[in-house]
Length: 113
Length: 108
Image (cartoon, each protein chain N blue to C red):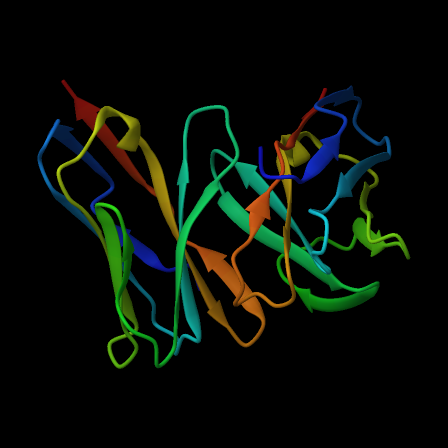
């Protein structure tokens, strides 16, 4: 158990819909990262938040957005969903920067029908 | 740009050694190594920082050649529990990229 929690575990929705994925980092970690893992694209970095502020952006689509709240939990919002958005979405946390070890949550499996 | 991992897959017998390589076309500040078992989340193995030394714990170690922008993961005396997909993650300018993974299978 990494100490990072994610909800829900599974999500099935339809194209065009909007969903929110939630992540709670390990106690003491200030940075949260979101990743997407699909068979064809592999593991892709989406975005990093540090202590409530966006710190780094990766391959995140404009239809996706995230935020980190004062209690340090984070949410990833995915809107106007397409079939290609079906993937495993992982959240990870670290003490501070990308150069610290990251601990991954169990993931949310999103299926878009 | 995504780092390149090699080999794509390797099959070992228990007790054998393996090396997994990761190379990038960009200057790197750090390299992460993770192992992921089927249906599970990636698990952190180690991180190597620019200017840092070779790292290791137990029978898994890694090196980082920052001039060549390459890292290698060394698995010695492999155990069944080493089976999984190994990913390197490279960090450059606040951007993290992962290799496509190396699938390692250890057989009894």
